[in-house]
Structure formats: C-alpha cells, structure tokens
Amino acid sequence: MLYVVATPIGNLGDITYRAVEVLKNADVILCEDTRETLKLLNHLGVKKRLVSYYKDNEKARLGEALNLLSEGREVVLVCDRGTPGISDPAYLLVKEARKNNISVSPVPGPSSLAAAMSVCGLPTDRVSFYGFVPRKTGKKRKFLESLKDKEETVFFYESVYRIKDTLSVMNELFPAREMTLCRELTKKFEEVSTGKVEEIFTEYRDKEAKGEFVIALRGKD
Image 1 (cartoon, rainbow, N blue to C red):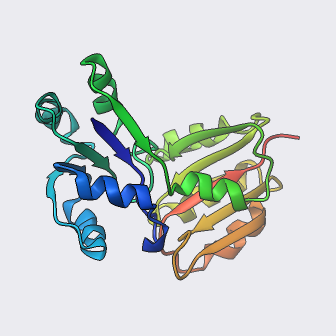
Image 2: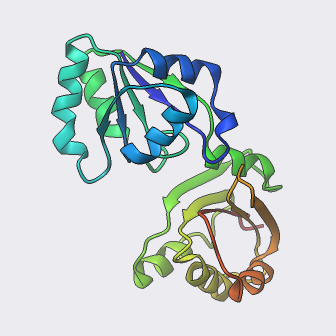
C-alpha cells in the first residue's frame, strides 16, 4: 500500500490521528527533505527509515519506491509541508503505482491552498490553482496577464524572494482588482491581508517579507 500523507504546514498540532498511525506503521517514508520530516517524526516520537524523494530525483527513485511496494512494504509519501501532489512530488509515483496494481490511499489533512481558500473572503464556488508563479520576468508577466480575463477566483503560490516583484507586476496589470495575500498560515506570525492589488502592493513594497505566500485574486467582474 502507498499512503499519500498530509503533514502540518506550520503548526505541528495540525497532524491528524490517522496520519500519526500511518507514519508509525510505515516501513519506509519517502520525503522531500529528510531533515524536515525528521523534525516532525521526532516531535511525534516516531523512528522510521527515511528516503529522500523530491522533484530532482523523483525519476531516479521511482524504481526503488515501486520495488518496495511490490515487496509488500507499507510506503508513505510526504512532502515538507502540506499535501503531496499539490505543487509537490506525488503524481509520477501515484500514476506508476496504479499502473502496477498497487493500492494508493490518501490520508488527508493540512493544505495551504485549502487553508487560504477558507479565509480569503473571496468566492470559492469556482477556482483555478496554478502552483508557483514562473520565476523568469517574461514568463511571469505572461502568466499574470493571462489572469486578466479569468472569471473565477485564482490561487497561486509565491516565494519570499519574489513576492515584491510579483506584486509589482500585478499592480501594473490590474491595480483595482480585489485580492487576498496569506502569509505563514497556522504559524506564529500568520497574516491574511485583503484589499485591492494596489493596496496590498503598497503595504508590502517597503515591508520585510518572510515566509511563503498564497495569493488569491478575485475574478473579473
């Protein structure tokens, strides 16, 4: 059995009872960063074999993971924070596991996307999600321009290193559009700011940015 397990996005108290039991019973845990997963396991008092499984080694480790599963091992897949498969590795392994008639079970829980949707104060009956904004300036602008005519609320992630630049481009393209910016959700310095793009841009232009961000942009009226 392959278990795809959601882990806390910040507050360790958000781990589910079922997730703890699955982690305790695992033979192997595949994780993006063994150091990050070790922090969680130490908090839970769990000792398990950890194998690194992240975007850049995903294809190389795929065969090893499938071999473990074919041997009847209980394999758990986690990402650093949140739910695997949402802008984190999972798709390839899940796809190949199903091809090989290996059962795959989700262990749902924390997700920064779901958390942001619940507190953004924008319509969520229809949404689009795009993962992380492109890093390169040209591709970033092209991506943000493509959002102009979207009628549904759009969600995407942004890094602390590029948030100011992204807000600057958004301010050029649609300054009056309503948005919500979520930072450090579930953590000590959690922050949710809602307003027009130009207002959020002004707020963060000269502010020291920390953490990762989830941005929600209201659709075109």
